[in-house]
Length: 268
Image 1 (cartoon, rainbow, N blue to C red):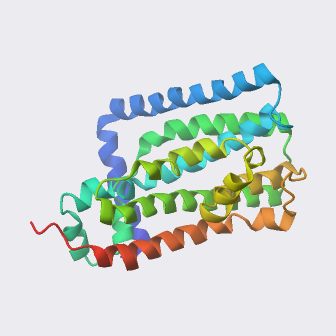
Image 2: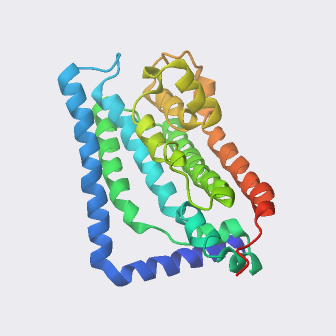
């Protein structure tokens, strides 16, 4: 059984387990849907009060909002093993058992659980994104669809990379650090608005350190077909999502070749 097939079995088992409690699943998904609506209302209130945001319109901002929330919902759903790595594996010593298995540790952590309840946030983001695309009359050309798929995959990879990095830090801290949440959940809040509204040092951090802008802002500017206020070229905009895959690869390398070498078990 190859790795992809094994991961499919992991997902199947997780799905069946969560469907044993359908009411709990539906309430959790509905709760996530309702809570995220508050964020949209906040954006609407901002534009209702001020009329615009340094030249950006409400549909344009909603395009960013919907896209980023869909991307993060998928990444969050598949990364629960990394997100709870410190408390669930290092602190309890369960990591020893995973290391004894003849399979990749990363594969086992990705198969820890598929958090289906994240579909609530995904659905809400999809509705907002669909409205924004309709309001902006974005043309559905093969190039646009291909770029959105590429950016979506790069965005999922980037956010998964953040969870992997948080797990990497857990080798030393055991518990997850709240500062990491400023880059995961805080990163979602940041990417809900165009990068151009932020200060230069902030833009540089989320472009070259944590490439959030590369998987959201730049490709969506290309989809909108507008001139980037930051002056980026079209070629850069369409190739920027590649940074998400490179970020994930770097995080996995740190996790495997640096973090695991530091691990000494609980001794229990």
